[in-house]
Image 1 (cartoon, helix red, strand yellow):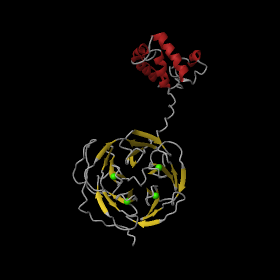
Image 2 (spheres, protein in one colour; image 1 turned 120 degrees about the vertical axis):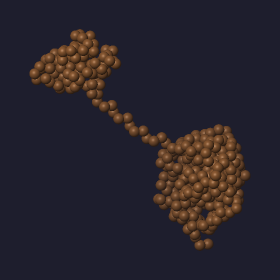
Image 3 (cartoon, protein in one colour; image 1 turned 120 degrees about the horizontal axis):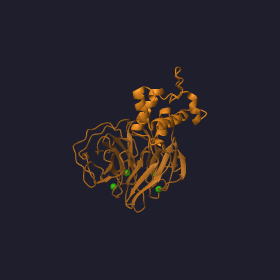
Image 4 (tube, protein in one colour; image 1 turned 90 degrees about the vertical axis):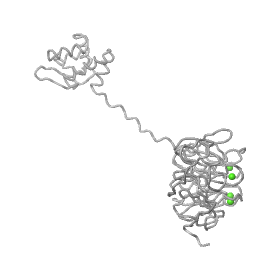
Length: 390
Ligand SMILES: [Ca+2]
Ligand SMILES: [Ca+2]
Ligand SMILES: [Ca+2]
Ligand SMILES: [Ca+2]
Protein backbone atom coordinates (compact mmCIF):
# COMPACT_ATOMS: atom_id res chain seq x y z
CA UNK A 1 0.00 0.00 0.00
CA UNK A 2 1.19 3.49 -0.82
CA UNK A 3 2.39 5.16 2.34
CA UNK A 4 0.16 8.00 3.34
CA UNK A 5 1.39 10.97 5.20
CA UNK A 6 -1.99 11.95 6.52
CA UNK A 7 -4.76 9.49 7.19
CA UNK A 8 -7.96 11.47 6.92
CA UNK A 9 -10.47 9.87 9.15
CA UNK A 10 -14.17 10.24 9.42
CA UNK A 11 -15.79 10.00 12.79
CA UNK A 12 -18.04 7.01 13.04
CA UNK A 13 -21.24 6.42 14.93
CA UNK A 14 -19.20 4.61 17.53
CA UNK A 15 -17.36 7.79 18.27
CA UNK A 16 -18.98 8.80 21.49
CA UNK A 17 -17.48 11.60 23.44
CA UNK A 18 -16.18 11.73 26.93
CA UNK A 19 -15.36 15.03 28.41
CA UNK A 20 -14.59 14.63 32.05
CA UNK A 21 -14.31 18.13 33.34
CA UNK A 22 -14.25 19.93 36.59
CA UNK A 23 -13.93 18.47 40.01
CA UNK A 24 -14.57 14.82 39.40
CA UNK A 25 -13.88 12.73 42.46
CA UNK A 26 -12.78 9.15 42.76
CA UNK A 27 -15.56 6.75 42.00
CA UNK A 28 -17.82 9.15 40.20
CA UNK A 29 -18.23 9.24 36.47
CA UNK A 30 -17.25 12.59 35.09
CA UNK A 31 -19.76 14.40 32.98
CA UNK A 32 -19.48 17.41 30.80
CA UNK A 33 -20.07 18.95 27.47
CA UNK A 34 -18.30 18.03 24.29
CA UNK A 35 -14.72 19.20 24.49
CA UNK A 36 -13.22 21.62 22.09
CA UNK A 37 -10.90 19.82 19.74
CA UNK A 38 -7.46 21.33 19.69
CA UNK A 39 -4.06 20.27 18.53
CA UNK A 40 -2.47 17.74 20.80
CA UNK A 41 0.08 19.14 23.15
CA UNK A 42 0.33 16.45 25.77
CA UNK A 43 2.85 13.66 25.68
CA UNK A 44 1.11 10.32 25.48
CA UNK A 45 2.47 7.32 27.22
CA UNK A 46 2.26 3.55 27.06
CA UNK A 47 4.31 2.83 24.05
CA UNK A 48 5.83 6.28 23.91
CA UNK A 49 8.14 8.22 26.17
CA UNK A 50 6.95 9.05 29.65
CA UNK A 51 9.07 12.10 30.21
CA UNK A 52 12.58 13.18 31.02
CA UNK A 53 12.25 15.40 34.05
CA UNK A 54 12.67 12.94 36.88
CA UNK A 55 14.09 9.57 37.90
CA UNK A 56 11.57 8.88 40.66
CA UNK A 57 8.74 6.53 39.73
CA UNK A 58 5.61 5.36 41.51
CA UNK A 59 3.70 2.21 40.62
CA UNK A 60 0.13 1.59 41.70
CA UNK A 61 -0.72 -1.98 42.62
CA UNK A 62 -3.57 -3.65 44.46
CA UNK A 63 -1.09 -4.40 47.25
CA UNK A 64 -0.20 -0.72 47.59
CA UNK A 65 2.00 1.77 45.86
CA UNK A 66 5.67 1.19 45.35
CA UNK A 67 8.34 3.72 44.59
CA UNK A 68 11.64 3.33 42.81
CA UNK A 69 14.44 5.35 41.34
CA UNK A 70 15.91 4.46 38.00
CA UNK A 71 18.20 6.29 35.65
CA UNK A 72 19.13 9.92 35.90
CA UNK A 73 17.16 13.12 35.71
CA UNK A 74 17.20 13.97 32.02
CA UNK A 75 16.91 10.37 30.85
CA UNK A 76 13.81 9.64 28.82
CA UNK A 77 11.82 6.84 30.41
CA UNK A 78 9.83 4.05 28.74
CA UNK A 79 7.86 1.06 29.99
CA UNK A 80 7.81 -2.43 28.54
CA UNK A 81 7.93 -6.13 29.24
CA UNK A 82 11.45 -6.50 27.94
CA UNK A 83 11.90 -10.14 28.96
CA UNK A 84 8.41 -11.48 28.37
CA UNK A 85 7.72 -12.50 31.97
CA UNK A 86 4.44 -10.65 32.04
CA UNK A 87 5.74 -7.82 34.22
CA UNK A 88 6.35 -4.35 32.85
CA UNK A 89 9.48 -2.53 33.89
CA UNK A 90 11.33 0.64 33.05
CA UNK A 91 13.95 1.52 30.51
CA UNK A 92 15.62 4.88 30.11
CA UNK A 93 17.16 6.27 26.99
CA UNK A 94 20.26 8.43 26.69
CA UNK A 95 20.67 9.36 23.08
CA UNK A 96 20.25 6.14 21.14
CA UNK A 97 21.16 3.85 24.06
CA UNK A 98 18.44 2.20 26.10
CA UNK A 99 19.25 1.07 29.62
CA UNK A 100 16.75 -1.66 30.35
CA UNK A 101 15.69 -3.01 33.73
CA UNK A 102 13.75 -6.24 34.12
CA UNK A 103 12.83 -5.74 37.75
CA UNK A 104 10.39 -3.13 39.07
CA UNK A 105 12.83 -1.94 41.69
CA UNK A 106 15.56 0.64 42.05
CA UNK A 107 18.98 -0.39 40.85
CA UNK A 108 21.21 -0.79 37.88
CA UNK A 109 20.03 -1.62 34.39
CA UNK A 110 20.11 -5.28 33.32
CA UNK A 111 21.25 -4.58 29.81
CA UNK A 112 21.79 -1.91 27.21
CA UNK A 113 20.72 -1.80 23.61
CA UNK A 114 21.39 0.73 20.90
CA UNK A 115 18.85 1.46 18.22
CA UNK A 116 18.01 4.27 15.84
CA UNK A 117 19.70 7.54 15.13
CA UNK A 118 20.10 10.72 17.15
CA UNK A 119 16.88 12.69 16.87
CA UNK A 120 14.62 9.66 16.53
CA UNK A 121 11.51 9.23 18.64
CA UNK A 122 10.83 5.78 20.00
CA UNK A 123 7.87 3.52 20.69
CA UNK A 124 7.59 0.30 22.67
CA UNK A 125 5.29 -2.61 21.87
CA UNK A 126 4.89 -6.29 21.27
CA UNK A 127 4.68 -5.86 17.54
CA UNK A 128 4.73 -9.60 16.73
CA UNK A 129 2.72 -10.95 19.65
CA UNK A 130 5.45 -13.12 21.17
CA UNK A 131 5.01 -11.57 24.61
CA UNK A 132 8.21 -9.52 24.51
CA UNK A 133 8.14 -5.78 24.05
CA UNK A 134 10.66 -4.31 21.65
CA UNK A 135 11.43 -0.94 20.12
CA UNK A 136 10.25 0.97 17.13
CA UNK A 137 11.62 4.21 15.80
CA UNK A 138 9.35 7.07 14.78
CA UNK A 139 11.29 9.07 12.22
CA UNK A 140 9.36 11.68 10.28
CA UNK A 141 6.19 9.91 9.27
CA UNK A 142 7.90 6.53 9.13
CA UNK A 143 7.71 3.94 11.88
CA UNK A 144 10.49 1.36 11.80
CA UNK A 145 9.67 -1.68 13.92
CA UNK A 146 12.15 -4.15 15.34
CA UNK A 147 11.12 -7.44 16.88
CA UNK A 148 14.68 -8.26 17.93
CA UNK A 149 15.67 -8.33 21.55
CA UNK A 150 19.27 -7.38 20.79
CA UNK A 151 20.83 -6.22 18.58
CA UNK A 152 18.02 -4.26 17.05
CA UNK A 153 17.34 -4.24 13.37
CA UNK A 154 14.17 -2.89 11.86
CA UNK A 155 12.06 -5.55 10.17
CA UNK A 156 8.96 -3.53 9.43
CA UNK A 157 8.62 -0.08 7.96
CA UNK A 158 5.29 1.61 7.79
CA UNK A 159 3.88 5.05 7.39
CA UNK A 160 1.14 6.33 9.62
CA UNK A 161 0.13 9.80 10.65
CA UNK A 162 2.19 12.94 10.54
CA UNK A 163 5.74 13.54 11.63
CA UNK A 164 4.43 15.68 14.46
CA UNK A 165 1.93 13.14 15.76
CA UNK A 166 2.21 11.50 19.13
CA UNK A 167 1.51 7.80 19.36
CA UNK A 168 0.06 5.33 21.77
CA UNK A 169 0.70 1.62 21.46
CA UNK A 170 -1.74 -1.09 22.43
CA UNK A 171 -3.60 -4.23 21.52
CA UNK A 172 -6.88 -2.61 20.57
CA UNK A 173 -8.48 -5.80 19.21
CA UNK A 174 -7.14 -8.34 21.68
CA UNK A 175 -5.27 -10.46 19.13
CA UNK A 176 -2.05 -10.27 21.12
CA UNK A 177 -0.31 -7.91 18.74
CA UNK A 178 0.35 -4.29 19.66
CA UNK A 179 -0.36 -1.65 17.05
CA UNK A 180 -0.41 2.12 16.84
CA UNK A 181 -2.82 4.83 17.71
CA UNK A 182 -2.27 8.47 16.89
CA UNK A 183 -3.20 10.83 19.66
CA UNK A 184 -4.24 14.12 18.13
CA UNK A 185 -6.00 16.55 20.43
CA UNK A 186 -8.64 14.35 22.00
CA UNK A 187 -8.91 12.09 18.96
CA UNK A 188 -7.33 8.68 18.99
CA UNK A 189 -6.87 7.29 15.50
CA UNK A 190 -6.14 3.64 16.00
CA UNK A 191 -4.99 0.97 13.64
CA UNK A 192 -5.08 -2.80 14.18
CA UNK A 193 -2.26 -3.91 11.92
CA UNK A 194 1.35 -2.88 11.66
CA UNK A 195 1.08 -1.76 8.08
CA UNK A 196 0.67 1.57 6.35
CA UNK A 197 -2.89 2.64 5.87
CA UNK A 198 -5.90 4.31 7.31
CA UNK A 199 -7.18 4.28 10.82
CA UNK A 200 -9.51 1.40 11.61
CA UNK A 201 -11.30 3.40 14.27
CA UNK A 202 -11.39 6.88 15.70
CA UNK A 203 -12.26 7.43 19.33
CA UNK A 204 -12.66 10.72 21.09
CA UNK A 205 -11.81 10.65 24.75
CA UNK A 206 -10.77 13.15 27.35
CA UNK A 207 -10.24 16.88 27.19
CA UNK A 208 -7.58 19.14 25.77
CA UNK A 209 -4.65 19.26 28.15
CA UNK A 210 -5.07 15.62 29.14
CA UNK A 211 -2.31 13.12 28.58
CA UNK A 212 -3.54 9.91 27.01
CA UNK A 213 -2.35 6.52 28.17
CA UNK A 214 -3.26 3.02 27.10
CA UNK A 215 -3.64 -0.17 29.06
CA UNK A 216 -5.70 -3.23 29.81
CA UNK A 217 -7.39 -1.84 32.91
CA UNK A 218 -9.81 -4.75 33.34
CA UNK A 219 -7.47 -7.59 32.39
CA UNK A 220 -9.59 -8.90 29.51
CA UNK A 221 -6.66 -8.89 27.09
CA UNK A 222 -7.77 -5.78 25.21
CA UNK A 223 -6.00 -2.47 25.67
CA UNK A 224 -8.11 0.64 25.87
CA UNK A 225 -7.53 4.27 26.67
CA UNK A 226 -7.26 6.47 29.64
CA UNK A 227 -6.33 10.04 30.25
CA UNK A 228 -4.41 11.69 33.02
CA UNK A 229 -5.57 15.17 33.91
CA UNK A 230 -2.94 17.31 35.63
CA UNK A 231 -5.50 19.76 37.01
CA UNK A 232 -7.17 17.05 39.07
CA UNK A 233 -4.14 14.73 39.42
CA UNK A 234 -6.47 11.94 38.33
CA UNK A 235 -6.59 9.12 35.83
CA UNK A 236 -9.84 8.57 33.91
CA UNK A 237 -9.79 5.02 32.58
CA UNK A 238 -12.13 3.51 30.01
CA UNK A 239 -12.44 -0.25 29.57
CA UNK A 240 -13.69 -0.34 26.01
CA UNK A 241 -12.17 1.09 22.89
CA UNK A 242 -14.84 3.74 22.50
CA UNK A 243 -15.80 7.13 23.80
CA UNK A 244 -17.96 7.37 26.86
CA UNK A 245 -17.72 7.89 30.57
CA UNK A 246 -14.74 6.75 32.54
CA UNK A 247 -15.15 3.28 34.03
CA UNK A 248 -12.77 4.06 36.83
CA UNK A 249 -11.12 7.15 38.20
CA UNK A 250 -7.87 7.04 40.08
CA UNK A 251 -6.99 10.20 41.97
CA UNK A 252 -3.33 9.89 42.76
CA UNK A 253 -0.11 11.82 42.80
CA UNK A 254 0.55 15.47 42.15
CA UNK A 255 -0.34 17.74 39.29
CA UNK A 256 3.19 17.81 37.86
CA UNK A 257 3.54 14.02 37.73
CA UNK A 258 3.74 12.29 34.36
CA UNK A 259 1.49 9.27 33.82
CA UNK A 260 2.20 5.87 32.39
CA UNK A 261 0.74 2.41 32.75
CA UNK A 262 1.76 -1.21 33.00
CA UNK A 263 1.38 -4.52 34.80
CA UNK A 264 3.59 -4.19 37.85
CA UNK A 265 3.07 -7.49 39.68
CA UNK A 266 2.35 -11.08 38.71
CA UNK A 267 -0.88 -11.16 40.69
CA UNK A 268 -2.24 -8.09 38.93
CA UNK A 269 -4.84 -8.98 36.32
CA UNK A 270 -4.28 -6.02 34.04
CA UNK A 271 -2.50 -2.72 33.78
CA UNK A 272 -2.57 0.03 36.34
CA UNK A 273 -1.19 3.53 36.53
CA UNK A 274 2.30 4.68 37.25
CA UNK A 275 3.70 8.15 37.78
CA UNK A 276 7.02 9.77 37.07
CA UNK A 277 7.69 12.58 39.49
CA UNK A 278 9.66 15.57 38.23
CA UNK A 279 12.85 16.22 40.10
CA UNK A 280 12.67 19.35 42.23
CA UNK A 281 13.97 22.41 40.47
CA UNK A 282 17.57 22.97 41.42
CA UNK A 283 17.79 25.29 44.36
CA UNK A 284 19.94 28.33 43.80
CA UNK A 285 22.97 28.10 46.05
CA UNK A 286 22.63 30.21 49.15
CA UNK A 287 24.69 33.35 48.57
CA UNK A 288 27.48 33.76 51.06
CA UNK A 289 26.46 36.15 53.80
CA UNK A 290 27.21 39.69 52.85
CA UNK A 291 30.16 41.14 54.73
CA UNK A 292 28.80 42.60 57.90
CA UNK A 293 28.54 46.35 57.76
CA UNK A 294 29.77 48.35 60.72
CA UNK A 295 26.13 49.09 61.52
CA UNK A 296 25.28 45.35 61.60
CA UNK A 297 28.30 44.70 63.79
CA UNK A 298 27.10 47.50 66.05
CA UNK A 299 23.59 46.08 66.22
CA UNK A 300 24.95 42.68 67.23
CA UNK A 301 27.32 44.09 69.84
CA UNK A 302 24.60 46.32 71.29
CA UNK A 303 22.26 43.35 71.53
CA UNK A 304 24.88 41.48 73.59
CA UNK A 305 24.49 44.25 76.17
CA UNK A 306 20.72 44.03 76.00
CA UNK A 307 20.54 47.21 73.97
CA UNK A 308 17.82 46.20 71.56
CA UNK A 309 14.62 47.93 70.52
CA UNK A 310 14.61 51.61 71.45
CA UNK A 311 18.17 51.43 72.89
CA UNK A 312 19.42 50.12 69.56
CA UNK A 313 17.55 52.86 67.74
CA UNK A 314 19.19 55.45 69.99
CA UNK A 315 22.63 53.92 69.39
CA UNK A 316 22.00 53.92 65.66
CA UNK A 317 21.10 57.61 65.86
CA UNK A 318 24.19 58.42 67.93
CA UNK A 319 26.68 56.76 65.60
CA UNK A 320 24.85 57.90 62.48
CA UNK A 321 24.99 61.45 63.81
CA UNK A 322 28.64 61.17 64.80
CA UNK A 323 30.15 59.35 61.82
CA UNK A 324 27.47 57.70 59.70
CA UNK A 325 29.07 54.46 60.98
CA UNK A 326 32.24 55.24 59.03
CA UNK A 327 35.30 53.79 60.80
CA UNK A 328 37.54 56.24 58.92
CA UNK A 329 35.52 59.37 59.74
CA UNK A 330 37.86 62.11 60.92
CA UNK A 331 37.02 65.58 62.18
CA UNK A 332 40.06 67.73 61.50
CA UNK A 333 38.77 70.51 63.75
CA UNK A 334 38.30 68.40 66.88
CA UNK A 335 40.51 65.43 66.07
CA UNK A 336 37.52 63.13 66.57
CA UNK A 337 38.01 59.81 64.84
CA UNK A 338 36.13 56.67 63.89
CA UNK A 339 32.58 55.44 64.36
CA UNK A 340 32.17 56.78 67.93
CA UNK A 341 34.24 59.93 67.11
CA UNK A 342 36.64 59.38 69.97
CA UNK A 343 38.73 62.44 70.82
CA UNK A 344 41.51 61.75 70.18
CA UNK A 345 41.16 58.54 68.20
CA UNK A 346 43.94 56.74 69.99
CA UNK A 347 41.77 56.54 73.12
CA UNK A 348 40.30 53.50 71.38
CA UNK A 349 43.67 51.71 71.57
CA UNK A 350 42.44 50.44 74.95
CA UNK A 351 40.10 48.15 72.99
CA UNK A 352 42.51 46.99 70.31
CA UNK A 353 45.64 47.87 68.40
CA UNK A 354 43.55 47.92 65.22
CA UNK A 355 41.45 50.84 66.43
CA UNK A 356 42.25 52.86 63.29
CA UNK A 357 40.40 50.50 60.98
CA UNK A 358 38.41 47.84 62.83
CA UNK A 359 34.75 48.80 63.33
CA UNK A 360 34.32 46.22 66.09
CA UNK A 361 37.19 47.70 68.11
CA UNK A 362 35.79 51.21 67.69
CA UNK A 363 32.26 50.15 68.57
CA UNK A 364 33.46 48.22 71.63
CA UNK A 365 35.13 51.37 72.87
CA UNK A 366 32.07 53.47 72.01
CA UNK A 367 29.69 51.17 73.87
CA UNK A 368 31.86 51.23 76.97
CA UNK A 369 32.08 55.01 76.74
CA UNK A 370 28.30 55.32 76.46
CA UNK A 371 27.68 52.86 79.29
CA UNK A 372 30.11 54.64 81.57
CA UNK A 373 28.99 58.17 80.85
CA UNK A 374 25.27 57.90 79.99
CA UNK A 375 24.32 54.39 81.17
CA UNK A 376 22.75 53.58 77.83
CA UNK A 377 22.46 54.82 74.23
CA UNK A 378 19.25 56.75 74.78
CA UNK A 379 21.01 58.73 77.51
CA UNK A 380 23.77 59.57 75.03
CA UNK A 381 21.27 60.47 72.31
CA UNK A 382 19.39 62.79 74.68
CA UNK A 383 22.64 64.54 75.44
CA UNK A 384 23.44 64.95 71.78
CA UNK A 385 19.97 66.37 71.15
CA UNK A 386 20.46 68.86 73.94
CA UNK A 387 24.11 69.80 73.40
CA UNK A 388 25.14 68.58 69.95
CA UNK A 389 27.80 66.23 71.34
CA UNK A 390 28.14 63.38 73.80
CA1 LIG B 1 9.23 -8.17 32.16
CA1 LIG C 1 7.48 -9.01 20.55
CA1 LIG D 1 -3.91 -6.16 18.27
CA1 LIG E 1 -9.14 -4.38 28.66
